Length: 175
Image (cartoon, rainbow, N blue to C red; front, top):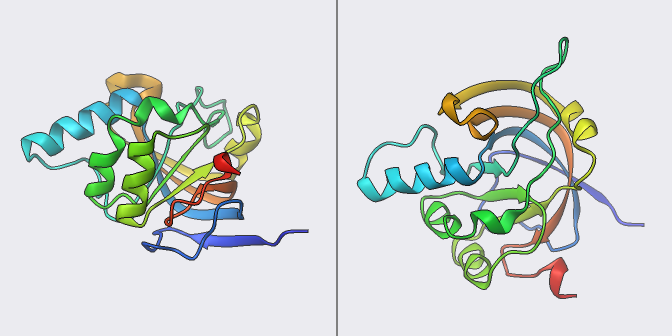
């Protein structure tokens, strides 16, 4: 039986996490998908300020469903991560320390994860309603016109994840 590791954001660079570790993540994370990633990279390329500090941040590739009455957040399942691969190295260069999604990443992203000491977590798809129970608070940060792809700041408690790619490049996908 494996041990579950409790971790808190902000994440340390080169955290002592290894591929396959089961974690419960608590703290502040940000939602961002394709359209938000494109805008973040455009701002970086223009030298303009970002809507949130990427240093030590964790981005959850999530496009939440509308929030039901009486709930903090709508269903919060992970989206397929490779759609963000074109943008990820630029965000890691700015200090991003973790990403949450589902599925494999490109060789360029794995190299950037190793170079910058970051970590990629996998969340379980298909349990979005259950994952939303881990959201303690949610606040719109940027680009409301993107609707479900707008950037939101979440505070989560005990979000269940698996370390999919660790800071050394170890991967659950290459076992």
